Amino acid sequence: MNRSKRRLKFKLAALIIFSAMISVNLFSLIAANWGNMAYNTDTTSDTTTTTPRLAPMSAIIIEGAGYMLKGHSDYLLFLNRIELSELQGTDYNELRIILEKTIANLEQASGTYRELYRRASSTPYNPAVIEKLKAFDYYGFQREMGLTPSVFSEVRGYLSAGNVDGIYYRISTRVDSILKRLYIIKGMVENGRFPDISNVWRAGQDFSENFLFGQYVAEVFNKILNSNLK
Image (cartoon, rainbow, N blue to C red; front, side, top):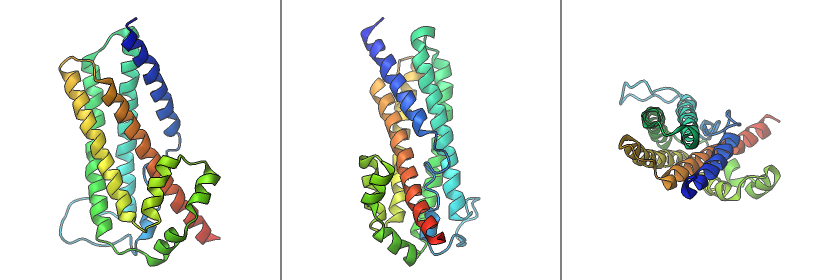
């Protein structure tokens, strides 16, 4: 067995297992659920356009999450086929079809999150919620929940400053970053070349980090929401 392919096999297996573990928490993952509570209203009207994305912000959040989760599922299937190629050979046509589905879902997610950021940045904040975000015990929560420091520090940076708009902008730009890598991978596959493993790894890493980022945002808002209900 070729040494580089042997290394590829073991490292891809680890990436698939890690990504699958992260994907278990589907409800509050990338959606950044309850983030709409940081705004004064979730039903603002927009008379500048007649596009179908004039749903409340919470619905747009869920829509974006749906596309992202489907795209991640497709990408895991792509990793599965890359892994099995060691035993079964590389079916470049199948890989291309899977990547096209992955990219299509992420392109939909990208447009949805851009619309979410546009809506959020033009909607006034709810001052009471922003004050709660600024006063939240982020370090204590991180220790209590055992959150990954590198990812949660980003979440803390946005929310402790009351910058909820920035959360949606960050998710949007990360989706676009994943797409750029997928375009490169797809180009190689379309030319019958085995994809560059570095881009395969980094795309998987970006998927995973984006999921954790959204999940941690949701956990903070959920904690604040539950404290308000007591």
